[in-house]
Length: 75
Image (cartoon, rainbow, N blue to C red; front, side):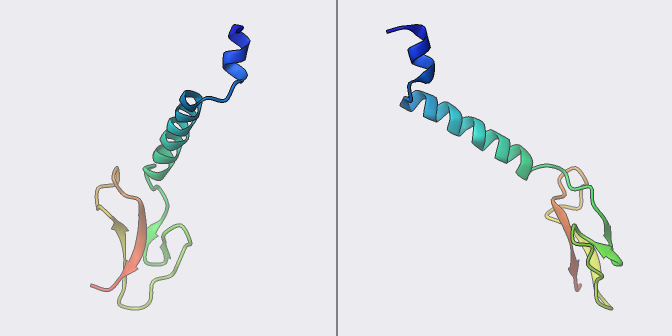
């Protein structure tokens, strides 16, 4: 068997490596810091206008480094 055969042959080890890589890419994308708008007149990625009496609040954390988005909330 040649070294080239190891690269082109589908094996469980190669599939695991690919799966780990894909999972890592998705986890980085999922935990990316939200930097969009977070005000009542332009709330969240969709730019929603919060109804009267509602506030635009960050979630799941008020810390900007851990923020994943913003939503209208009645509090």
